[in-house]
Image 1: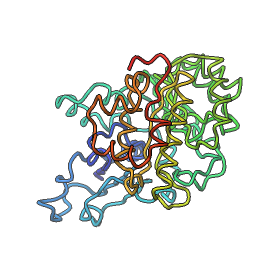
Image 2: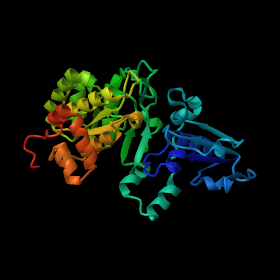
Image 3: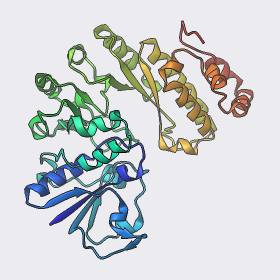
Image 4: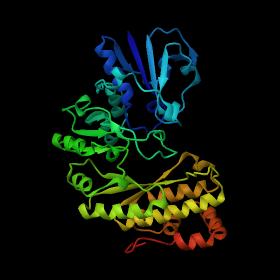
Length: 371
């Protein structure tokens, strides 16, 4: 059999920079069965000017997407030999891979052809690094938080998923873990110890739940051969007390590079109106202040419904200012806007309509910032 594999995020998102692990497992499984498997790099391989053609190329096609915003041509989804899945289609209802495939060793060669083409086209080495240099997998799955906006919102605990040997490749220089909430797993200490014994730099792409940080986990993580920077999140201002406490604990053990996500634009009451927007923007500035107080890098993450907000443009401006350390640590938001000449008419109008919020937050900057 000839198997075709479609990473729809890779095809339709110009900045996509992460391989699809499910497809890598499918490829490894089918190759071990004696089938051929390859990544389809263009939908035109399957059509002629958008029309279905005789299915002469592939006996079976698997398509996967991670992001709900990724579009897939309708005619592709109607192919009779196609099977598709992923959180991009089903959010928290995505059917799991069959057990024998879920726990199959990934095919680390699947993206080689795409990497070669991307390299010739001048794609940055940093974008290609994850495809070439990393072992990828889950040690644990699930989360205890049940956040309404998260793919794991129906999960109630974090449990062991795969042993490291199931996906670890000694020839790769780094390890990338996709675990949802490693510190919520009862076996987190043993898992960290196993990772540290490899001697390879490792990281958790979903970040680490700072609310679960303890002296022991902070000590272990701080001395680990961690890849690049640590990632935490400060999603809700109502959790200020626990976040400040844990950031203080973290800084007792390390001053290493730490980035903290700041979720904005998510309204639990599903109103997305003016009052929510103003409150949410104020909350974002408060969280940014706290994060920089501890010498960490804030990073604004905009929930997809931010586009329904009357302050959509302001959210974009705040993210642009905040997500660059050279600005958030050196200029107030107002200084940044005028420095960039960024939608000044809109900015001035917002200031006239919301003077108290503007006075409290837009001229704030880190102590010692040079402006």
